[in-house]
Length: 113
Length: 116
Picture (cartoon, each protein chain N blue to C red):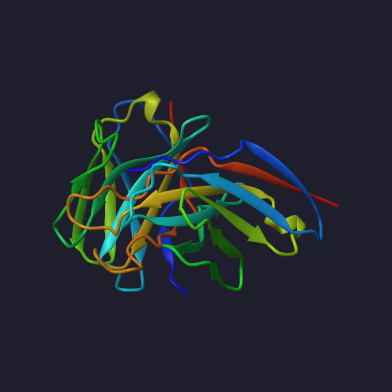
């Protein structure tokens, strides 16, 4: 599985966009990019995933570069409740013999009032 | 909403005790997972299961076993608890393998186990 690199921590002002980068320079052609977050004392929560195209849902947008070596998760209007650890994970579809998701250390995002 | 329910939020056990951590999901998911989370080490996969009565070892299966007799229930068993198994244990589930939702995990709230 490809590994990812994320900054250990970031700050963002409340109401501004939070842009969380992730480097996955060794990603293979059939690996997806997944984003999860974990708010303190809770289990991780799925946010979004993508393969090649940019994706948007009610929580966030995912921008994947054309060469797929990096991506950015965008929270368009960060609130204090978005303070969490954000995990970027690269993985194949889950099949027999494939490894399930491996969570790294993520980025600790602090949204500041 | 998919719900993954872990039976106990907090447990305190003694060294050598047999410990059962129960997890139940209500959305007919085929896949279920057990992770543990420790400060500085992140989430580590213990065991997972693609289907009833099937189990696969994760990265750190030593000292643990699992049971999946029914599709909705995945139990983690510590045969003889030790102090180094003090941790937060997280259960998750997802749709069947090979499907686009297979890596979209829904997690429970976690079970914090302390072994004295």
